[in-house]
Length: 86
Image (cartoon, rainbow, N blue to C red; front, side, top):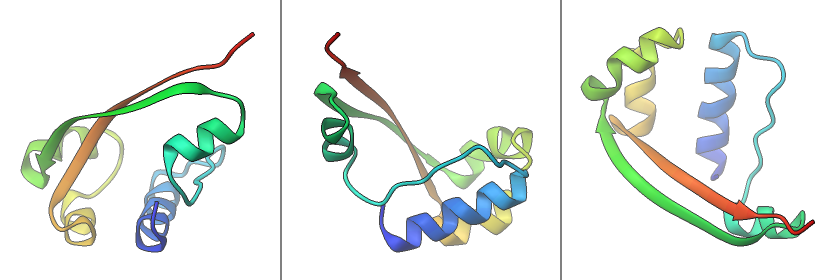
């Protein structure tokens, strides 16, 4: 995550009233590898417009009009797969 992404994530966390959340700056693959995960894959699944994501954002207590400008009106989802040896 970049500094801008971290700032937005923390603002969304505050808006949603979440406390048990940690955001880490860096690359997912490297961060997971540092704590022992192997075979880390990040597979982008879809890029959503703010309008496409409206239902999800509202259900999570977020205001799409407030969030969309900060992310240039686009949201992305991804699968993160990793294996941690026993």
